[in-house]
Length: 333
Image (cartoon, rainbow, N blue to C red; front, side, top):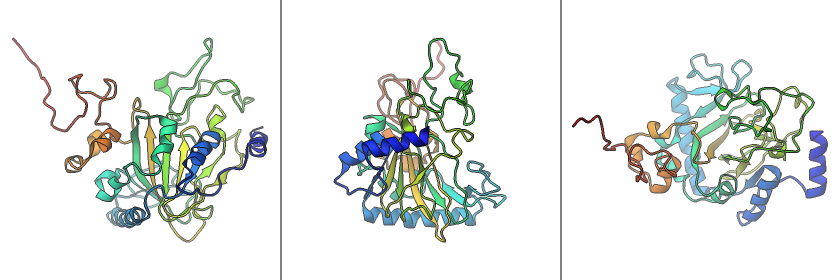
């Protein structure tokens, strides 16, 4: 049914955005994002910045690998997400986390570059960074399972329907029961609260592990299921250095297998609404000397700005927080 539905969409409403777009076509990109759950945007960051980021990432990743502190996964023996600081050397794809601490050039990515208007369409005018890292897909890696990036968001339910409590949701358990006959939800779907920006530092294609996407799946109203969706069709995102694939957090996607002879390097920034808990705890993880260099926009992205009273420490009138907050302690009269 889903494959037929996709065929219907492409015939009736137009082709998927298989190729990247010129920088002036922001409205086209935003329309693709709404229609298909993703878009491709050329020059998401300036070309000179892209080059500097690529060089710094290669240096950082090599150093972490040499010091045996690299995080690697995505092999036949070490599944995606199985991290243990490279002690067994069985992972292939390498992740580099907490980029704000690993070079000033990474902070330059977090300006009002071309991708900002697209993510605002998904998450709104205020947002946080949930994670800010790099994914290096190396030759021999396996494809990632299809997934959504807001798997943790409770699904809509009917008034009389049993549901899985929000604190019991995990990556393998989304609903209290699964009806195997239902493959498409024509009634209620969750709203998007996450947007990903993946910047292709050295270009992306099917051969080097380009991101696999199921176009239109952000409107399916459910998460992918390995049994139901084992034959689902995907496309591979393609673009030159500096191009970005920007996604709606509900779209089904995953890193492809790199069958080329070259590494595929990409920056991955996950944005979420200001109500949600980020993947990386920047308020604890950012080094103090790095924090002192942040502008207010960057502080807001990393969760140092109070949002409607949330994220505050003690004073309800605070706007921005710092590492040196003078808070009231235990008192007696």
